[in-house]
Each structure stands twice: as structure tokens, then as C-alpha cells.
Length: 316
Ligand code: XIL
Image (cartoon, rainbow, N blue to C red):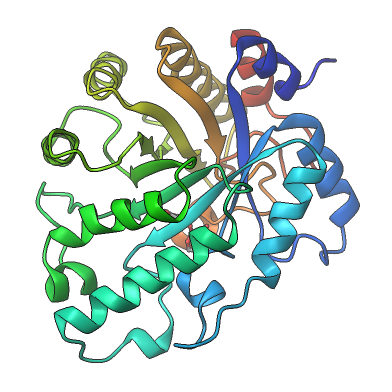
């Protein structure tokens, strides 16, 4: 049958996945790549553009792994979604010391300009700032916030814009899909940044959810208010985790959730891309991070399409 990719292309949207570490050396590499190039037209390197991977020492960058993801994407006419320039996790050890504000600003500026500059013209979308807001709805207390203050956010966007004026620059976070204290804070923050002229083009909703689903009306309204700020909308890391003991009923319920979220996204013309955080359950972060959960993606561990895959196809 037709692929998700070809259906998405007819609708003018992107559909994608998180590309696993060293996919070019895994035993089932060919199978993995065949499926990726058939089904998707955008990828995000799952880890290999993060600080600890790409900037392992103060004066040394390692672009070689990230390059493999970019090469694969470009060879297959896919976009690359870069992830991520400012985050509090997966930082290299050398960052773990006392910095003055001026020192850390310089480190951050160099990092952003070097990485974005390196991929200029090839990575068309960047998650510039990832997860800067706490679940209560306040600034998250990260090394960046504590040393620099909230202005690290606007500075990061300005530097990214300078390094590649054509790239789409995104703020990305989880648990901001519906209207709640965290998404309210994020909305205010981005609204104020936009009013100040900070170059922020889009918002990424990670969408790591479980089979309780989400409040769909709230999701729809939330998409609308962010779109009304003039932002492009992205679903960046979708997965729908279910208990390890998955029954057929769980898989069907999961399919409904995937389909419903696609439906609501397609109603909003500001939605540019929907990306899963992987595609086969064989390679998913879920079992390692959510005890007792698994089976969060649209293909099973043998690369067979699950009910979620067929449900999404019916919506596209
Ligand atoms: C996760 C990766 O999937 C794991 O392989 C890694 O060990 C930890 O990070 N939000 C993000 C992603 O923005 O970078 C995270 O990715 C998942 C949650």
C-alpha cells in the first residue's frame, strides 16, 4: 500500500521519526533504513546532536555522528530537525563546574554559532531551547537559568538566527499539549518574546503520552492559541506508551489516540510536521524511562505495522 510519507506529501505536511544512535552499524541497519526512507520525510537525530555527543570537550566538536543522520536524510530527500541547542540533560562533564555569567554566555554563544553554522542550509529546523519550563509553570532551574538568568532563552534564539538566517527556530517541551499551568507559562513566555522581536518561529509539542490519551478539546484550543501568536506548530516526539502486558484492546486504544491526535493536527493549518520518537518498538526510549511501559510506537519489534499505523493512514 501507500506509505505514510506519500500520504503526508499529498497533504503538504511532514511526517517523521527520531533517528537512533549509530543506525548505520546496527545488525538490522538495512531494514531500518529501508523503512525510514519509505515511510518518512523528516528525521530528528535522537541523541547525536546533543551537547555531550557533539561537543565532548571545551575546544572539540564531534560532528561525525550527527553527519551520518544528516547525510542519510539528504540522500533520501528528507528534512533534518536538529535537536537540541539548549537543554539541561545530556551535557558534557566539562560543563559541570562553576561558571560566571559572562563565561557561560560565551560558551553558549560559541556552541550555538558553531553547531548551527556547521549545518547551515542542511538542518532546516532547530529545537533551539528544550524543556525550559517546569511542570508547575515557572522557569526550570537549570545551569542556564541559574547562571545566566531567563535571558539565556532570547539570546539563544538570536544567536541561532545569526548563524543560519533561513532555519526555522523552535521552542520544544513536553506536557504543553493541553491547557495547563505549564503550557500557560510557556504561552506567556513566547508571547512576550515575540513582542520583543525575538526570532522564534515555532513551537514543538513533544507528545510523550500514555493510553489515557489527552483532553482533545483542550489540545485543539491550545494549538489554536499558539498558532494565533504566528507560530508554526510541530509535534516533535510523539509516542503513546502502554503497559508491557499490552492486550489487543490496548493496541486498539492506542491506535485511536494516534488517529485522534492526527485528526486534530490536520484541522490546524499551522501544523507543519508530526514526528514520532522512533518508529519500531525495538528501538524506543520508553521501556528504559517509564517502568512497566512499552510498545509506544507504530511498528512492533519485528517491524510489523501495528493498529496505530493503519489508523493514522486512514486519517491521512
Ligand atoms: C531521550 C532519548 O530518546 C534517549 O535515548 C536518551 O537516553 C535520553 O533522551 N525529551 C527530549 C528527548 O527532548 O531528547 C529525549 O530523548 C526524550 C524526552
